[in-house]
Figure 1: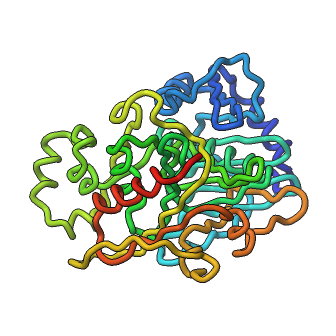
Figure 2: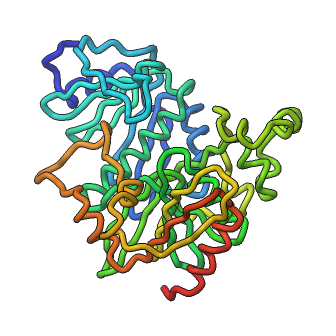
Length: 360
């Protein structure tokens, strides 16, 4: 493909080569997203993954994501490397900005994503990398929410009787693990790792992304609600490991929320009433839960903020992602710091007590 082509022209040429034969409509928060593909097998896999978010196909979509099952695509473009996030070393993505959008290429898989000018294409070995197609669909939801004025947060989310709680923490603190502990106490799931927060009629609200939580073996072993996540032979092996070994283990399982916590337990949207920030450490100290004012603890606010990343294209005037913008969005939200030693059971019970004292 010629380097001078824009996203629209490149998309038209790609779509002319493949017959789109399968479709899926998803209701994600306030948005309908249509997924289409030349691979019926991929659409069946996406339907199984998104589960309860699948909706009637007569619904009008806000946008359409097309996933083309093809060999790895060579665009002929000169890509710019995306430098790894702080604390990481592996280069995973590269990108090229064109006149009407952006192309992102995954270096490890060869998957290519084109978006802009009303086009949203995932191209390459999609079935082998369906998780990247799922992430792309969720990134399109994030684009829609950010365009509507939301801010992106690096947080999990749960709710108790319409009372929403976000859980943030610096890398490796265990926010997803804590969210699942709280679900074992009867809460509903909102999101695993990303939240979109924006005010609605003067009150804070949060929208999650339809991504199943990925947990390490230690999380499954220490939560009775997740007993069936690990196959028995692997469960025996992991059960013999120490707590520190399990914590550092790079091995993940998807948690099917509906299977382990019941139909309707993945809500995706909630009011936003409280924020718990994990700032604890692996030690024998007691866990401490303290009410804090983020205006005085901007260090903790950084655990909640999340950059928009490569898959967001700024539309119109530049958005405000300053500390002040986040603090304004959090007005009226009770904020708690979890410090001292790590104790998920204590933290879950303590935060639930706080939620019970809040009226929606």
